[in-house]
Length: 241
Image 1 (cartoon, rainbow, N blue to C red):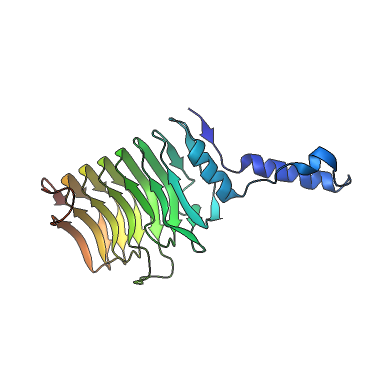
Image 2 (cartoon, rainbow, N blue to C red):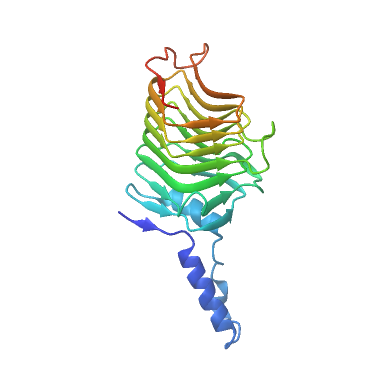
């Protein structure tokens, strides 16, 4: 297992260069041609692309500005922050892509961080097996608005999905949405100021319990809709919310 801390190398390199610049002249020749340090955003996307199964990518505390969607397609990767109030990926200045983070990989874990102010869906997981979303907050920080992204936490066409102790605020459609999926648990989570707080759609064997949904147009919804690829939703239990 490899633990990756984005930007650690870049920060070290930048610090060393700053210290040297106070006592030495600017280098010339080959040293002057070295590539500049990556930004946090560039480093994080590089780590996601180059990740290997079993890697843990750590997001340090702080507000990290993102301008483009992030994506992960490597199985068996964990993305871990320092807490949903501490490690924040902010997409308030997003200029490219729709999602904040798009995952198309099995055995995926994301925990202890926040994704804010995306143009589209904050966290989308598509066609994945064994998905854990734990202590993740998705939020549009300017409050409810029809121009906000549609979905906060959005696993679709996936299986063995656990959403636990998550927070979803301000989505233009659903805060926590699980669609066309099977074997689902949504528990101990909070949804506020969304159109739909928690929504289970065209899915099978979902347990939704010990959640709090307040100030949404609809709190907890279960649908089986026509004209979708996966039909025949059944076995959903909603209790103790």
